[in-house]
Image (cartoon, rainbow, N blue to C red):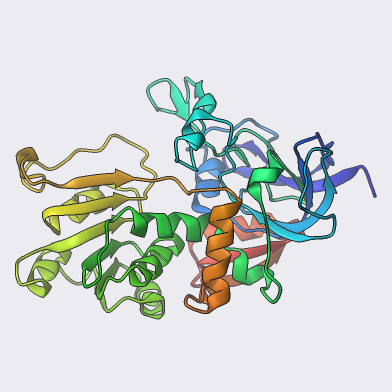
Length: 365
């Protein structure tokens, strides 16, 4: 095996390029994965644009599907040559946060940063791939704490079928789980990008019987019906809050899921809620949020606001792949384009500008 590999590295704001890098050495608790398929996430676009700071030269990407090339001496229960995924979020499960039941957090990775606009801190949680360590848009990736983070792919599932599990599916489903959904609930999902579409699918699995999907793109609203939406609202053609109130007889929605990360969608998600309703926030916000006084009922409305980061770990990945294997959710329509790793700059251009109906791109080294 060659000692070098190709990788997509962050160079500077606006520049991601293919570079040659050494194939990582494997420590006792690590696993070296040969990437067979990965993808581009909206967070990667924030990195590309310089909106989220990472070190120049870092390999980016955080959604690995591949084959175990080499195992660390302390890693057991896996075999070289085995097909696996790892969560986009791969915390050290020895951390206090992870042991406290939050499988996305790792308190040791709150580091000072004067450039991120986060009041002096860069809250990385358990997100290491393409953030603190080299990521997955490469021929190989080193998975830390592999015993806790690697999950075998069930026989019969393709790379495309499990490609959403490391991040998009885990994040979207967590948004639905955080929305306190009960059987028979009305749930409004704001934004039907890949994460919002997975939140729609998760809301259906949890028992919501009126799922209202909101977006400004009719193509995405059509896909949301495949994911389980009962009603679609194009925010460019109606007042979404008024429509939700009409549809609920003035009661308001039981839950709202915000999957975009803007002030406007956050405020609208709060305004559609019933008294005592839950706002489940998935969006990554780039500026301070303001809570509208009326929508918040001046603090008297018994509202709940839950935030989430994509849960990681092998048990989370096992459960998500089990959902795919069961046939209860088909996320195949989300993979709309295929690119080689060598062509990743063109793939970024397509994804960042949202052309040609793109949702997710399968990137193959």
